[in-house]
View: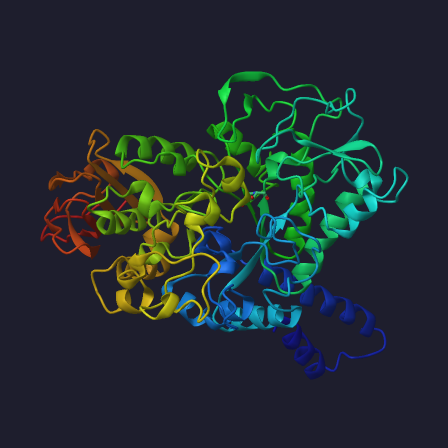
Length: 591
Ligand code: NOJ
């Protein structure tokens, strides 16, 4: 636009002389690049970027929508659901790995980073999905498996072929300590030693996950370059960011020190170790900064699979100058696992003041669904609505997990022979695997919940008859309707978009209450986390609201407000506007 105006001006003033031409061309290029930069990095008045106002939604592609009825979901299936996603209030979808893969770990074993697995479609289908996403304002985030490849990746096939192969040093190869003895005591999180002996070259290779997932050697600059180039390749194809898989496992101690053995055994029956020498090594931050530089060039966002045990660890992922991950996921929040207002308050206060932008998650493809984790077996739907109303109204970006919006439950395998997830097969019965949280999306009451005409790769639970998109969208009191209402509010209400978070009534052990306030406007959220009715009173005078009342915006059916008092049914939700009252003869102090 600016460039066009400049041209018109030049023409009008007849300035297009030979003398002026080079200067003007330069100005034109400058204008164009400035307006491009502004487009890709557009921020709002509060300095917030697109991903800070967006709602993200994780899709496990095997299980979302099956367009060709082979029992496994695909990209065309996702494309066909873009309108659904947009109507629900989703702005960006993170698709778990859809690249070519032997599927040993269902895509987290990539054999080609720059293609699509035929099971999911083609690159043309991918482009079509991006285009349809654009039409519906849904951005595409891919899952970048940075720590390891598949053992079928061309890099690894070459690497294992001889000690002098060009890709030998792209992975971590070492001699054993002695015959039949691995190089050290590191344990694979998927069971057994993290070292596998390869007879072709008589050395061991390192794998933090499954043996079919050899770790890349990020100390090799050629690996770094290939991986950074991969992100560039996808950005050019229209990707808006990446979720980075297992970032904390990228580097290992080169001297291979043994980890300290701790008490007890893990779910695979292996000794617990402190993982000091093969996890969370500081070198990973240098790589994250480089990935970020490339992401910034494309106006993209980096989300991290960042398991941390305390807030200081989480802070590190934002980078010393906010120059690493924009969105490291706060998994400590998923660790609360009970409806405990004091515990939630503590967690939120920590991440809210950590200096970065909070990222809230309550479920994903590795964690038992929130419906089961928080549900008490009797009030699961009410609790699912409460949890949605909760994390979707916090300050920060939420990442939903497909099916959460309809209260999908885990459908765990009952017999070892039914287990598909490798860790469930090796760890049964202590570790039953993650199949339960990865079952097909429940679209309607039809065959296989409308996911596929063929028997799906994992079975749908019987609850699909009541918990599905078609049925719930007709019921104003369903989990789905609560999600839709809250998501709509979140996209339009300034206090929810921009506002600060302030905990209210902090001594209350049953009701979680907080205020989101922005420039004299505020939304009050009160959530009854108990199974008995609750009455709560609020005093907001200390927060600048002198004469006010609460006006409901979204509530559960038997919850109401009178003046400054809210009456909540068991697990009831109240989200209301704080209305300032103009009383005659009183000057209302609005900040
Ligand atoms: C984390 C992923 O979320 C999980 O599903 C996968 O098995 C491991 N990383 C290995 O890539």
